[in-house]
Image (cartoon, rainbow, N blue to C red; front, side, top):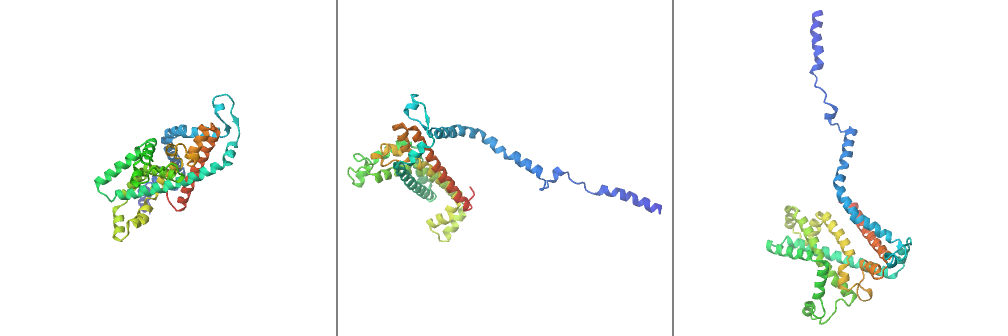
Length: 332
């Protein structure tokens, strides 16, 4: 009896030593332990902001402060007398905005700006996307020539490009009128013809950005997808509409928003090609209208109000467009 107990006792005493030791809590990595994971997420969440801080400071100095000053001036009566120091600036609240919204010319200019910008955006996207698809269909030498020509148009300053297009359509010496047999027809005399001429110049200097961006996106699409669509008998238009456009939608969002911003605030082309807004202001857009009010009429407060209204319109258009895309399930 005693021997039997003495034999079993050492075995029972040694049994706990056979069990595998439990891993420490830090190494277990249990997903339910929130303190460690939450602390890591909180620490890592601030890391990108530290890297972005220098750029944000620069952007804040270059963008936010001028916008703040523009908004501040829009609430004051600020003319040449206040600029020279002859009179103090007078706070008017929303007086400049009330005067602006009560001016029928402002609404005419706003409508013309919206229609002109929409036509420029549609034309630019159409030309850029069509040439991007063309780049994927031609050989290396024509592709290189087209790329160089497009980049040359993109790199041309707006003043230089506008002057060249004015010469091309000049009623006396322009080659376009001679080729079309139009004699001394003036393209800048009529309102619609002047807007059409400016539209051509805007599209000419804007489509290279769309073309290069969309072409890069098309090159990233797997070739097997396009080959499968071709084998199924799909036309080039059907391939673009049903295959390429959905896959390139994030890229198209970027180029569309940037085209809207660029074309809505066109200034140089209108000012140079229509000599400051056309005859009796028939070709005015918002930026040229703001310039005339601020500098030609010395109504700096009113010009600043037009600038703020333009900024708010562009922000609203961008936010609405992004919201519609998010409703469709697009990841941006």
